[in-house]
Length: 181
Image (cartoon, one colour):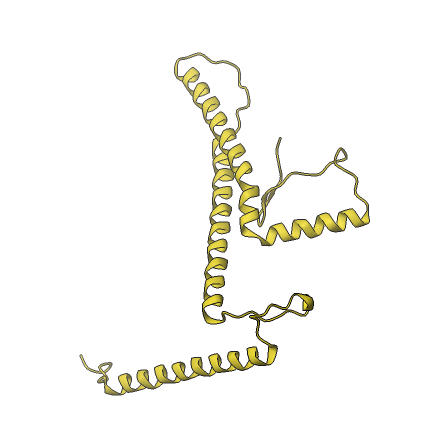
C-alpha cells in the first residue's frame, strides 16, 4: 500500500470511505488529539517506529527482489521484465523516517534540557489562569515571579555589559596589525 509522503510529517495513511464516519464533535476531538500528538516528540517517535519497521521490511524485500533479478540476468536467465520497485526510492523513504526519528529525539532532548534548566533557575511554579483551583503550596504569586524574572534580566544585562567592557579593553590593548606587512 503506497502512502503519500508529506514533507513535514512523513508517510501518512489516507482515511478512505471505509474509515469511521465522525460527526462535528468527534472530528474536532480527533483533530485536537492529532494536534497534541504532533507537538509531543515522544508520542510522534512512538508513532514513527512501526512505520520505520514497515519501511525497513519493504526495503529488504525490494533489495532481495532486485538481487534475485540481477542474479537471474547475470546467469543468462531472463525471467520476464516484471516491474521491480526501485531500491533507491525505498532507501530514501527509510532514511526520511530515520531523519524524522532523529529530529523527534533531538526535540525531546531539548524539551527535557529546558525543563531541567527551568526547574534549576525557577524552582517554584506559577499558578496558571487555566487552573486556578490547582494552586500548589510551593507556587509563587505572579508579582513575585515578575520580580524574580526582572532580577534575572538585570543580572543577564550586567553580565552582558561586563563582557562588552572586557572585549573593548582587549581590543584596545591589541596592536593594530592590518597595515603592517
